[in-house]
Length: 519
Image (cartoon, rainbow, N blue to C red):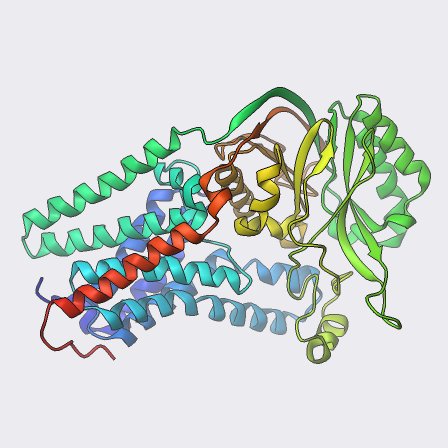
């Protein structure tokens, strides 16, 4: 197709402003707004800019502007954690948030640069390269510590493209969305050039992707166990200012013991760090009350608490673990959080940055020790329960080993760190993707919300109101078996994305003629 970069390509500044606005609007594609087609539309518009970009640096700038809009509008709640609750001075908190957003925006910029550098404007090869590069860059971004706002997550609920999740996880859904957006951009370009056959071809390919997702959605990759379990999910709604206050400690103990006694489930699930102390600091009488409540129904309670492990070497401090311990009819078990939050639970480059965490931020227990990777499920209440804590459920690849052996998934979290921002809604949407990927129900117990129950197809079927105290009583049926994603992880989507990207690059070389200047 002839090169027709359009007005925005001739005026990069205008393209960047448009891309920034598109990034901001794309946030509406994610929870709590949940407009998946809008996320696709915004991505399509960005890819249209890349499709006609004459130079790789123009695409990189537009991609960077899109990222600043997306993460600036969609993840600026980090400011609440480090400023409002972490105690960082407002100017430093704003600077830290800006640097965080600036880092995240590099990844869509890199995707645009690579795709345009390797291909010719306005071609199918470029459209393919754009989709592959975007999906790979998004996956790599997750490896660097923040997989939030992955394009695939926006497709729950409401889009049949989410049907790709059990096959290849969120990354494959992101690739499917990127392919739809790239094909749509190519179709729009073809319509402008009055090439009806190409318009029909791209439209057909888009429809095929949606139909494939719908057909995959109908597949039941896992099987029910045939038994139901009554579960009580406890939302304590303890204000963050009180949670770690020693003066509030006894009231906190009494609150959760009373909620356990009022519950009706065979499995009782407390939020993350419901007991914000070390296990040995909790009075025996509190554990006995919780244990009796669970044992009365031949069940168990999962209690969020901190535990200690012996020092790794003589002279060192004991290891601090964000943990879940079991109390009740089953043998005593423990899960220790493995994937810790940088600057919140672990201190990167501690000799250099330790003072920053300890003297500027006021985050309690910020220097923790990771638990073992791939911990097995807990045997509680007649089920095998794969537990993860807070931020860990953003990493489907790390949870799949325990999920294969489990019948139920449980996430305990404390999103009170992000106040009344959209973070808790986004987190709940991410958790729903873990349920869909694994083909298992997922139960969430949180401090202030969103406490919810999600079925094996990633659909929330019960929840508690935000910032209220209560118990969510639900019945769930565990499931066994394995989805393709649990067996293969991200290998399939990454291979597909790489093939699409490389195919685009090779196609340019086969067209003949000297490459256009793309720097």
